[in-house]
Image (cartoon, rainbow, N blue to C red):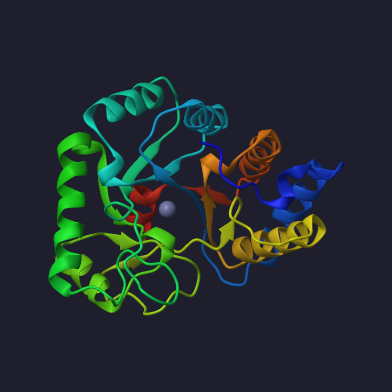
Length: 264
Ligand SMILES: [Zn+2]
């Protein structure tokens, strides 16, 4: 099913290749602290195989860039996993399959959408985290890596404490998400959104995207969020251009969560 496409993907600026190059180079030049610059890509809402999914993996594979895949446990069946694995195995890149909530539904009566928010009891949250993990461990086996991406990039303190107790390596939300994770649970926040941008005017959207990307690279920690169901040809073309530009910068460390965990 094709979902809403952000306005920027109605067409690419004519000088997009040089714009991306300049943005990436400026981010590298601006880096404010010593040490390496880490970049990861996180694709959300994974479970259903299809052309968009296969195309996404192909772009990462062709550019030899790793990708973190946030899988919705309740959407995954043995048959679907077989199909996803089949696509992934044909490719040369590195994948990090991890947990995206339980069934991606909202439980909050008011305020922003959350599956793991304050409206729920600790016992209910624990139940959903556990059965999500069990299902993924059961289907994915050793391919599963214990990182938790809450749907809509939000969760409450109870969830963070539970993840720590259950020995998850990290949580991945949006930049500056509150509350902060407890000590011992790493924070792999995304700070660049490619496909759920809300700007009404494409020009504003492009300006904001380049600003976000440059700042994220400059901070030394760049997490880029992908929604493959919302990608059209322009979005796929841009992704390819971006991956090529990142690969050309030898100072950048393109990692997935497992490698990122090991480096922290
Ligand atoms: Zn999601």
